[in-house]
Every structure is written in C-alpha cells, then in structure tokens.
Length: 327
Image (cartoon, rainbow, N blue to C red; front, top):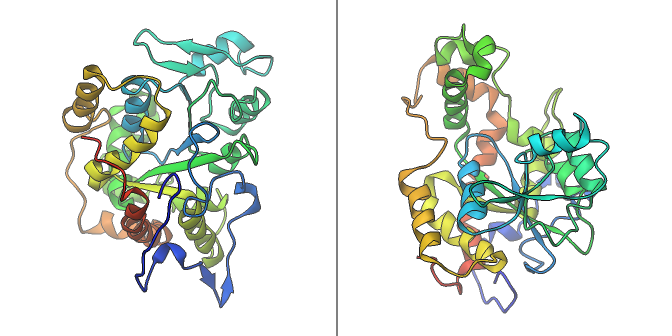
C-alpha cells in the first residue's frame, strides 16, 4: 500500500510493473528525477516527503491546490508568492536571503517564492524550499527544475492531474479568450480553428515537459522517457474522475494536514469540487472537424501518453485499497 504493508496481487498484467521499452531497449527514468519518490517501490512518508503537484495547465490543478491550501491548511510553494517575492527582492527576487512564509487574507499560508519559471525555482532551491519542513506542497509546471529542489532524503512525491489533450487545448483557448492579459495574442483568433492553426497552439506539452524537451522535434525516445516517468514517479489524477481522484489525494493531504477534520474543511472541499470548480469556463467541446484534426496532429504523443495515464490511474488503485474513503 501507500505507507507500506504487503501486497498479494497475482494479476498477470500489472501495467505498473512493465518497464518502458523502445527498440527492445529498457528505458530508465532520468537521473535528474532521482529525487522524486518511485511510487510503487518507495512509500510516502509525510514527515520527509513533500508533495509535488506537477501543474499541467487547464486540468483542475488550481482547484486541487486550493483544496490543499485553503481547505486542508497545507503550506504551499507555487506561483502564489510572486508579488511577495518581487516586493522583498527588488524585482527579480535574487537578493532574497531567507525563506518567508506569508499568510494571505483568506488564511492560506504560502512561501514567498514563485515557481512558475526556472529562475524562480532556482531562487527557491537556494532558500532550501524542497528541504524545509515549513512547506508541505510544492507546485510548478517545470518538472525537471522542481525535481532539483529535493534531495535523496527529502524526496518529492509527485502527483499530477490529467485531462484529454484536445479538451485541454480547447479549454486553454477559451480561457485565454476571457483573459484580458491575452487580448493582444488571441484577440484576432475568433475561432478554435484559427487558434489551432496559429503559432500559439501547444505541441505535445506533457511529453515535452516530462522529457525536458521544450522545443525542437520530439522522437519516440522522448515519448518513452515520458511514459517511464509517469509509470515510476507520478501519482495520476484524472479530471474526468474527480471523485476517485480526490479520494486518493485526500489520503495524501490528510497525512500532511495540520488541521483536524473540521466542518469547514468538508464543506469547503465539497463546494470546490462540485459547485465551484474555480477555473471552469463554459464552452462547446470540440469532438470532430477541422479543429479536432489539427489539435490531434499537434498532440499525437500526448494522446498516447494520456491513454497510458488512464491505465496507470486504474492500476494505482491498489495503493489505496486499504485506505478508507474520504467522504
């Protein structure tokens, strides 16, 4: 299970036990990610392992962060400290000497760092964010950079929310349309088709960030690395199965949580999960046609990776067999 204890699973095909191969060669998870827990072979120890929520955009991760911080009382290091960091470090934050934990007006505690870009993560590393017991959960899209803030003793326990790549791309377009910040870039793109043909459209975002290949051509090697990272290092959450995903994440959050179970906490979670999914934007799904075809071409690696993540999600249920339901 999650915290140790015997397993007596005798199924023939345990997808989580089958190493990724490419041209008959076994692919290893990259050495740069060795400070992330191998979730089937190492156990989650809330006293030393920080939760690392890898942030794939438009997957519900913002809601998960809100539940962890606002409902469960976990102290978070993410992009939340952007303004604090600028205030303290004269703009780029490079002169900050010590890790500060700030409490927001809503009671959320967060580190005065910004992990939304590599230089911000480097500053967080210099402040020992990955080793500090004052931080419970770390979140960033930059997987490789963030893995570098942990060490061999204080390993990160990686969790990520996944969503079908074409749904994600569609959601990204409509959220950018609504955001004044992107007016210049997407203002002229009046349809999802135009967006799909534009230079703004993402290309295999997950495969790129998992294999640390943010530009240039992707190959089957990159895809194999991405799969192996998910298989060995990532606890999968699925946006399309929020209830079971939350049941599992709650187990992890509960082990970390400072708060005792409270009425506020339960109401807070239910409200966020079922009524008030914060980044929700209402739009028609793209299920076929030109936009679908173009987005499909841009995401061939990610589409296969998403299917693999769905299978892993099913297999990872074993880790939570003996844990009570959160509700």
